[in-house]
Amino acid sequence: MWVVPESAIAGLMTPEAAFDAVEAVFAAMARGEARNFPVVREAIGHADALYGFKGGFDASGLTLGLKAGGYWPNNGKHGLINHQSTVFLFDPDTGRVSAAVGGNLLTALRTAAASAVSSKYLAPEGARVLGMIGAGHQSAFQMRAAVRFGDFERVIGWNPHPAMLSRLADTAAELGLPFEAVDLPRLGAEADVIISITSAFEPLLMDGHVQGPTHIAAMGTDTKGKQELDPALVARARLFTDEVAQSVSIGEFQHASAQKLISDADVTALGQVIIGRHEGRGDAEVTIFDGTGVGLQDLAVANAVVELAKQQGKAVQVDI
Ligand code: NAD
Image 1 (cartoon, rainbow, N blue to C red):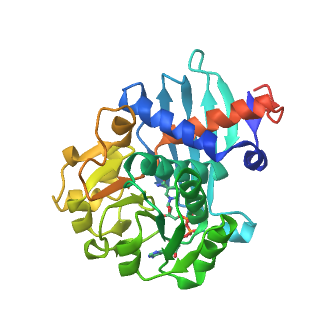
Image 2: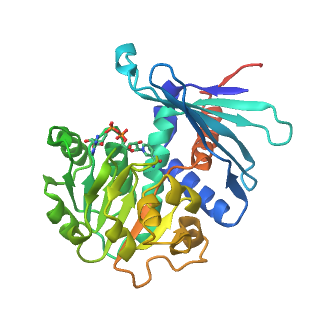
């Protein structure tokens, strides 16, 4: 089997490779060629940890495997980040394990790639202003991917904890774009594309904040109870997601769905737009992509990075 350590990922994985891998796997899901398996996520009763697996099989790319890991809230004292994961790939012809790949950086890159893919297909024509809600670890990756694959001239941002806003300012400076911290009414009125990536459990962006043609990539809500958007905003928008079943159960759309403001039929898998079976934005004023994070995304980027590592002689081969 091939081993690609966490420390090698930064030098191997490009945003373009992540974007292409995620776009391709969303398309494969829409064609019925790839499916995610039920997610396991359990509190293990030790170290306050949440541990689980996300897996699936993509028959078009012949990618079989799982991401194992979760959230250890006290990892700071061990000098580690709280989210820890490893991706395991298997040979779909024999069942033999074929690769073990560090999953921490890959998770940030595949999550950012998903929102960038959503903007490619759903952002309003001529989108120039990027609005960021959230300034945690993921936010910098989100901004970098949005700017790389979009045509933004400036970035505005808001965060529930203002002290963290420097991360957004620093990232915009690194990308050569002006940044301004604004309140949510201004953010909703001025941004053409909004990315929300917080750990909020209450709606932050309200229906009345959002003015004019806007695409929102709601990326923070990946667990029951989390919430970033006003359900009334969800109810008036055209809705897209990575996987419908996840979005209405653990994603952002769980709340509007529970309140019966939307039904499953109102939510379209982004892959349907990618393969040309759904028109996408059409005449909608507001579109929302609910990025819940599916196992096939992890497998797609892990597969891409193993190929890059093999080409560049950076993968280690071990017998198991
Ligand atoms: P982080 O801990 O580095 O930052 C947390 C962010 O949320 C900050 O902006 C902080 O100000 C804000 N925040 C924290 N507690 C809050 C609260 N109670 N109410 C409102 N805001 C709060 O986290 P991160 O690594 O940047 O991740 C952000 C979110 O993205 C998390 O919820 C994480 O689970 C989620 N995530 C989703 C995916 C996906 O595929 N959709 C992938 C990775 C992470």
